[in-house]
Image (tube, rainbow, N blue to C red; front, side, top):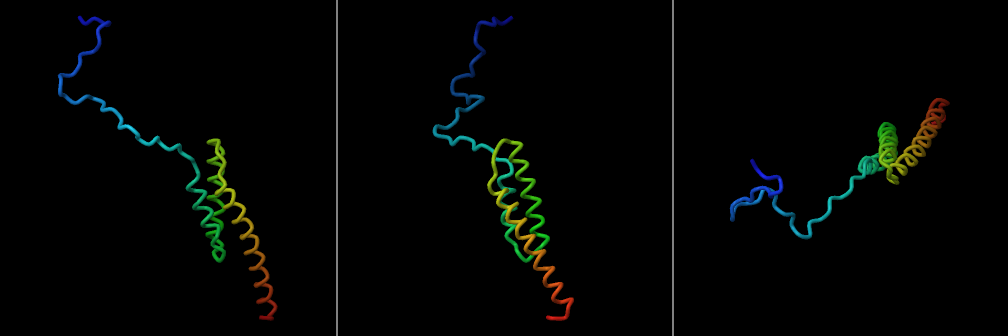
Length: 109
C-alpha cells in the first residue's frame, strides 16, 4: 500500500515529462468578441446600394450581430453602423423605386 504523504513516482531521468512547460513569452490567448466578424460582414453588405436583397441581408446580419454582442456584454459599432446604413439606404432605394415607377407609369420617361 502506498503512503498518501509521499509524492507520486517521478519519471526516470532523461525521460520526457508528461506536460512540457509553456515557452517563455508565449502570447496570451485573445479574448473572443462574439458578433464582431458578423458585424463587419453586415456593414460591407449594407454598402451595396444597387442590390435591394443584399442590403436586406446586411440589415438582418447587423441585427443578429448586435444581439449576439449585447448578450455577451460587448458593444459592436460595426453592427450598429450596418443597421443604420442598411436602413437608410433601403428607405432611399424604396423611394427612388417608387419615383421611377411613377415616372414610367405616367409615360413621361
